[in-house]
Image 1 (tube, protein in one colour):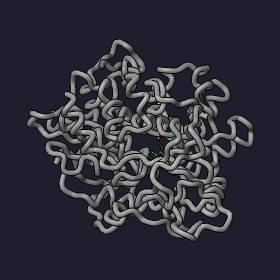
Image 2 (tube, helix red, strand yellow):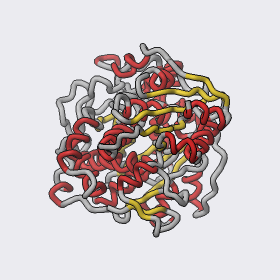
Image 3 (cartoon, protein in one colour):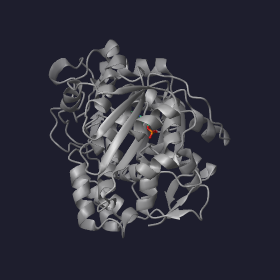
Length: 468
Ligand SMILES: *Cc1c(COP(=O)(O)O)cnc(C)c1O
């Protein structure tokens, strides 16, 4: 498969080149030259296939000729010992994307990327250094994904004092090939420093440098797999039993009359949720729109998705675009769903490369949710359905309520993507509904010690650290 830049079709690259360089030389984003369809035999069994199998079928055509099948099979098995359970909650379906080691959906992309990089660079004797700027979640997922991958080291830059203690431990508590820099500035400063280092020719001569931000195509493609898995099961009317990390109030503590659906912790595995859905609607809490773009790819591949909902917080550049046809980037505003505080979503360029405004409007419903509505939703869903939502997933839940009230979607069940475990954002969740059960991976991360170096928000400071 060839990839070309969103800004200039003559700038083409292989999967390896597109993945290892991240951004096209003209500043555009790499997109695949075509989106292949799933074979009919795969489409008809999406509802019953295991997660690594779906991941294999999804990624294979995008890396054909570059990653041999047996290698790809090893990569996906190793990357995905966890899956994406689809559970019933209060008459809806929740796609739980937080069962990976850092408890947010970014594990799906980062874990594949790390293993693909290791294979694509086999036989290289010069080590590669990956730079990543983070506002919180990306850094942890990338650090965890690349931890102990031979021949590759990672340097994560984060805004000092502006990420949660748990996120800091996920980034700066691993050691070995992962180092952490606490930058005395904002996330934008971190990004500026990374860009400066990536453009420094003298530095790159010493150590090859790459970046692992969310525009990397190798993070995006594997995410299409959980859309296919979810749509396949929703279409077939199948759900999963609760797993150990499903953040539900267990047993009899549900208030009387709460309709926690059949698929509660006592339901047998695969209990049917309402009924097979011919019109699957997936609601995606969105910021930089990498996640939703992966969903669009899955739909183009043939996954049985009827529509998407793009739910944002007040950073509503894309919902505004869908309504008006005019794209106006904004400066981002801080919210309690801070992984979605993006005013100029980079992946919009990819969406626009594949779809016109009219097409996007047909496929995607936009909606924006305030912090007050988000808090109210976390409290209400906990009270009525006994389920803990993190602030990002609560934006998705409320987005469905709002579109329903406006009669823009019907009464059928909708699937809301849950992008993070509520225990990851306990600062917001706990004061509203008490502590959510903490998954084992987060407990382990909390016990790590932070080792990071503080640097001023100056380009020269980063370049000095990297050169030493
Ligand atoms: C990154 C992130 C998002 C936003 O995803 P995009 O792909 O940037 O739209 C939403 N929720 C959580 C928890 C995240 O970490």
